[in-house]
Image (cartoon, rainbow, N blue to C red; front, side, top):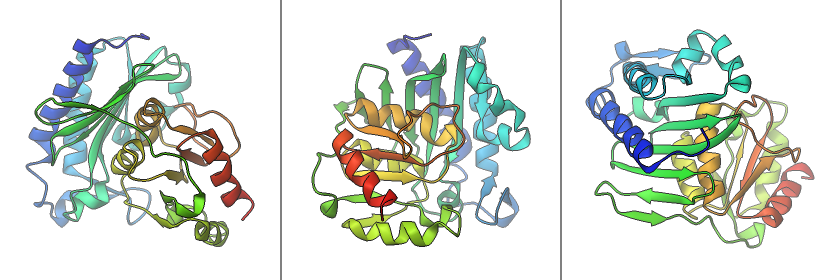
Length: 276
């Protein structure tokens, strides 16, 4: 399934919008301790909204793509074997029901919903929905990346222009790197004008795909965080690869992923991190 039609894209957007309206927005600002659980760490959270939205989206997208492997973040949390099937799947749909759960659970409106359609190991369509504002970022392979407002207005996206790394702003989630690597990355961050983290891939990809921020360095490779966003950033004119130089693939689970305005900027930023 290399070609995702306008009708299919619109239908998936509607599925996402309905799931957000039914499961996420009614719970935002009403999250209680009883509705929050931890997963791998004290700040790795799951809420009733995550579970409800994934369940609703999985049902809708399974009916829409009956031949596809459905990979939801919370389903993988319960059964990691699901993720191992991604590399060999002819068609897969990857779901992050609430990206930025920590923000959501603490009343911060920096969260989103992400869906990626992967065909033959390559992302062919990516969607990020922002339930609070009702808009989307969307991309299809080879067809550009777009902001789609709540009223349907479409604006083409462009990544940040290249420039000196000393003038760049970017994302570096220092806390997510192993403790022994943190001092190295902390020193490297001094090469840039500003570094931060928003604890939400959906919004960090929004910032780099719209040119608000120049780069991002990611410590973990989870397909629900990166498969859609990488395509959107690429179609907005940006460049991304692992620090090793290897091209990103959705089935990857190890490596450091760096996004930049273009290849030359990527090389300069990489040197800043690798050479210190």
